[in-house]
Image (cartoon, rainbow, N blue to C red; front, side, top):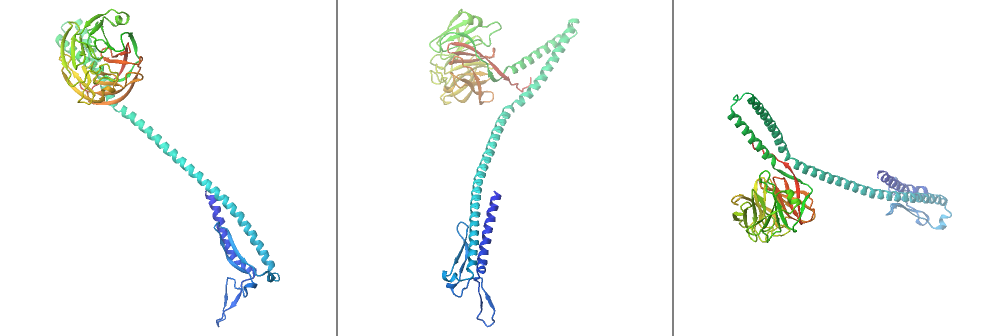
Length: 485
């Protein structure tokens, strides 16, 4: 932009110089300047730069030049009568001067056109420069926004990773502990080998105490490694296709070694017969089963078998029943105070699923909703023998909006739906009374989940999906507690 602007400046300066020259020089060229004596006695000469003709009719009158609105030079000359100029010797000179003025005017016109063209060029360049400046500003703002998004994403990742630092430190400490166990086992093995060679060389009671202590510490270490945070769910494995659209099936997580019985309950109400299959293989391949008749029909699909007893919600009530499957007798009944029932606060799929009983590594739980908690999910830890409520947590998640739910290591996980695309997206940690929104997808293969429960022994999710009995393996991130062994 600097070169065109310089051109405009030169043009305007030149026009001003020409105007000044014409106003001063034109009268002298024509010979119209006059000299007159002052009337004063001093007789000094008074020379005027203006035109003072003795007789205006016989002389030229030249007025000072000016500029019009477009910056062009204007010079006004009044000629005497034609009869007088024809005999004037200066007529030829004046004509030549007029030709020069005309030539100068033409040159000024050319210069003016060039100036106008340059001005248009400057204005065009100015517009382009403003557009370019605007684009640069947009690029700069976009770059800042992109950097801000990247920074926010990195910060979020750092926030996710920061809690893992103490966990890693715990892992380091646990690794040292395992090495210590290994050394103690080696020492005990060496002592036992020596005892085999020489009986009585070591105090047997002391040795037994050391072995028992080591066993307890190892058991405590395994207990700590058992729990973890859910990080993934495998693809489903279809075990069997049977029954109606709704139902539940399970195994006993506290069953003794060799007891692999499968328990099967078809429907969600007006049924009281429980099928017992001897093993998973029998359940998959045969219809050989033993039937147990419950004293009352169950409600929903939230039943569990735990330590030889089946726990279920009595139909159209908030009563929980503990029924011994061996003696086929009711061991305990208890009302779950304020719990909604009879499709008052069910899961999103309905089916009288107001009260959902669950088990995990920590024991027996009940998940339900109350009016006092505005229909949001309530979690209660139950005593498996007396069914007494040991502790309760009120969440802010609406139970009717939950597809299904299950508990792992004291953390309640809730799905966002029961049909179509499904994921686990809410987790409530009872050990800290906190919650978070997560995103753990899993395949809803048959498009209608009416039961989803965790078995801590198998480390698997049992599901009833539109008349199909399926299993999901789970991936847990093991969080080692910091308490001393």
